[in-house]
Image (cartoon, rainbow, N blue to C red; front, side, top):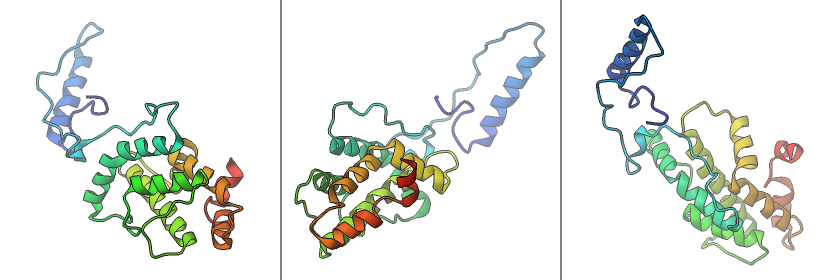
Length: 203
């Protein structure tokens, strides 16, 4: 299976047999040699149980002509399996402060980025609601990304989110739409905190 050349993760005995069988092919007098491994790989888990997933998410399939909000919604759906895996591994998630789903947060932020007076069911001020929604959406992306294979440094996560995802583009659009907001608290958040300084300098 793509991403699993030695079989399912964490099955050391099966993987050892695969490696030894491959090395034995080097003893043949003539080549090239192509042989099927005599054993079927152990059963792997499905999307309903993502523990065995091995391939990272690619957002290339997102519709080219979809709105930015639609693209973020599609990314959120693609990341759901990985976020579930993160929660299983760590027993918790840093999301949930707004009591809104990632899709609801994305719809709220997309409306604000379009200049609409959208609200969340929140007891916080507009500026605080906006801040919490942005932070929670980023957290959902970051936790999902960290559940994927590989090493994820803070710098790599930042580059990925702000430069490769529709989620990052949504927050950049939100920044442009709110930096001159009539609410001084919203304006201050947009100008000083919404987009990290390191990201501003690299765009």
